[in-house]
Image (tube, rainbow over all chains, first blue to last red; front, top):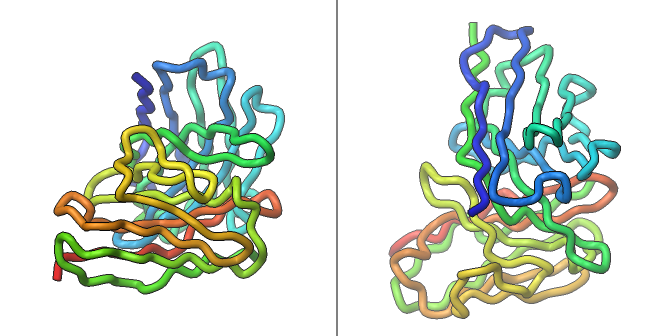
Length: 122
Length: 108
């Protein structure tokens, strides 16, 4: 059974930093791209970042303007999101998701974690 | 900027009725990147439809997806109590994933 378990969320002051983790199990982590998606309270889904299976290629939402960095440790089956210069508007539940390729030239997110809440407030 | 617009924002229907949800893109979408998710309160999103029209594992056949170009549709025939939830479409283009704002299907 695929399991994705996020951790690292919490309360942080504006301008602060936080590192989220997503522990994966039940599938061959090294064979799949992964993504982070967030959801502000009462709002819709917002894609944050994606990383290729070997971590060589990364994508970021334009609105991040370089504040977040995605990475992965395939030896530990773990995905990370380093978040810096946090703002109140970054307050959200952050989900990690497994990305499955669909040939030709397609993909979808087939498994999601339960999310970790990040609250940015003074 | 790629935008997905879902309509209606809220759909009020009774169990047994048919639901038709629309997802319109600001630019043409690669069909293999158009996906639908269901989300219930307090839960993570769940994949329903991928590649425009393929049902994910375990999704009943009352759910179907269709469309091409800029117009896509999720149809739920004969709504069941478990189907009342929020539905999001998603696409990938220009190195960005985009979600629609969601359609809430509520019990009338």
